[in-house]
Structures are given as structure tokens and as C-alpha cells.
Image (tube, rainbow, N blue to C red; front, side, top):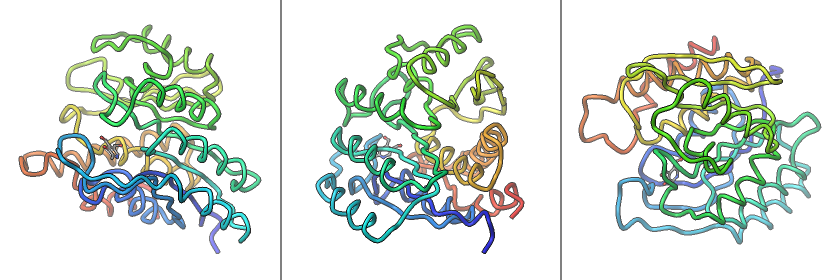
Amino acid sequence: MSSTYRKILTVQDISCVGQCSLTVALPILSAAGMETCILPSAVLSTHTAGFSGYTVRDLTEDIPAITDHWEKEGIRFDAVYTGYLGSREQIAYVKDIICRLSSADGVSIVDPAMADNGRLYPAFDANYVEAMKSLAFSADLILPNITEACFLTDTEYREDYDEAWITALVTKLCDAGAKTVVLTGVSYRPDRTGVLVLENGTESYYEHRRIAKGCHGTGDVYASAFVGALMNGRSVYDAAALAADYTVACIEVTQGDPNHWYGVKFELELPEYIRLLGR
Ligand code: PXL
């Protein structure tokens, strides 16, 4: 067995249509060579960003029995990676899962998927943000976008900012308890964007082309590709850069198709992701 064959648990919703959350994380982590276990937080007919009249079945009440069963079976995870969660109670359950089911050197990675473009997603409110703070600040690594970083630190969101403002934002995250931060969507020039990594008090920035602003689902594609690269032994910075390159390729292959507004055609670029990983 290869030493990089790792068992990952990812906790997020199933949006049956919409190319986000679990329908993105499972194939990407599988392509990264990970055994990918899933815990669906909710089942929705579609994601909530742009579709109307979607159905939601919250699975919160199933989680304790699933957790107990896994614990009894001796199942442990090398990483627990969380994304969009269905309710505040689920956040408490996820913290419990991380405590009880992580392997000795298990890593917890939290994408506090709750907001974008200055606003919370429709399902969430200030109480949810408070609960998410407790999960994010107890995780080993968080992957917020700028909007989420603002909500996590009670900072007023800005469209225009400079390097000093971004440094102040990640400093606030660390002061609140964040360990390693990968801040996405950091753009200082119109046609460029990038990710800022803060690890052990040191900032590094990876800049890349910006093709289109605010494509749906790219946060989940990015986080999943990041986790897959990290668990393949890449450094945080290298994983952040590799995931950015893959996400750009996914946006590029999708742009120009007006019918495909709800997600990116990440499947078409999975061979490129595997190539970038050197697998
Ligand atoms: O992480 C994006 C996402 C995931 N799941 C659901 C969503 C969204 C974004 O809106 O609505 C259900």
C-alpha cells in the first residue's frame, strides 16, 4: 500500500444538481488517490445560489448514530475536511467527529463555506457565523474567501483593499485562533487574483490569471483540490498553488457556455489535476 493512500472524511451537503460540495469533493479527492468517506450534511435538489424553489432535507439527526457506529467499528480518518454544513447543531457534531474519529496525526481542514461577494448564503444567519467561528478556530487549517474571513472576524467587507488590509484581516483570523490560513480570491489587479497562505506567521502569495469573477462552485473545487494535494504530501503553499492552477483550468474550460452558469466543468480537467499531482 502506498504511504499516500489516505482515508479522508468529507462532511458537506449533497446538492444533487449544481456541481458543488460533495458531488465535487468526492470525485476530486478520489482522483487524488484518497479513500474518500462522506458524511452528507443535507440533501438539496440544487445548490442555493441562483436556483429557486430548491428542496432541502437536513440530515443533522442522523449524524450522532453514524458517528457512534464508525467509532465502534474503529474507523479513523487521516483528515476531516468540512464544507457547507446544514445547521448550527451540525457544527457541534462535526467538532465531536474531529475529536473522536481523527487518527493520531489526523488533520482538520475547514472551508467555512457560508458566504461570498460580501453576503451570507441564503440559509445562514449571524448565529450560524458564531457557530462557524468555533469550528474554524479549532481547525488545523481554514480556507475562507475574503467575505468569510470578514464574517469570522467581524470585519466590514470591502471590494477594494490593499496588501495592508489583507494582512490585517489574516492577522485578525490568527488572533482569534486560526492556525494555518489559505485565503482565497485575493486580487490586487483587475485581471489577476490569487491566494494568500499564512503559515507559522509567514505570509506567501500565489497570483494567477483571473478569468471570470465569482463562478459558482469554484470554492469547493478549489478546497477539494487543495486537500487532495496536501494529503499527497505537498506543502500548504504548493497545494494552494496547484489547486489554483486546476481551478483556473476548470473555469477556462467552462467559460463561453451561457447554459453552464451554475458550476464549472471540473470533470473535464481531472486528467490535468492528476498530471499536476504527478500521479
Ligand atoms: O459551497 C457552495 C455551496 C454548497 N452547497 C450549497 C450551496 C452552496 C453555495 O451557495 O448553496 C447547498
